[in-house]
Image (tube, rainbow, N blue to C red):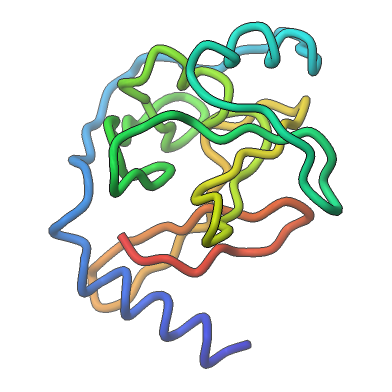
Amino acid sequence: MKTMTLAMIFGMAALSSCGPSIQSTDVDYHVSASVGYGTFYDALSPYGRWFDYPGYGRVWTPSVEIGFSPYATNGRWVYSADGWVWASGYSWGWAPFHYGRWLYDGPYGWIWVPGSEWAPAWVTWGSCNGYYGWSPMMPHGGVSVSAY
């Protein structure tokens, strides 16, 4: 586990110049609304496909450009009262980047598993030699090993 974590941090550091820009601001992005599956289903249906995925139930995959990666494509990191928050450039970004978590499956690509708890971003952060990086957190607390 320690080797995988260190490899992930070094990989993130190596690719840190390829990721989105990080910007500081005092904007408060926190939302404290109660949301449910119906809200997500209706709002996200025009932008992707819902399907049943073993072990997770109903999940969503976005119709996006090749090379899409959560918390790295079409958005930026913004510092807020709640910490670093992902400010998505996608019109549908309010849901998948702040409620629920992502997992990667080769045949499907990135899959979003809905959740009801809001967070600035469902990622885990790491640093090494002055470089900072992140990786999407999988459902149930796992980490999707990717480098940004």
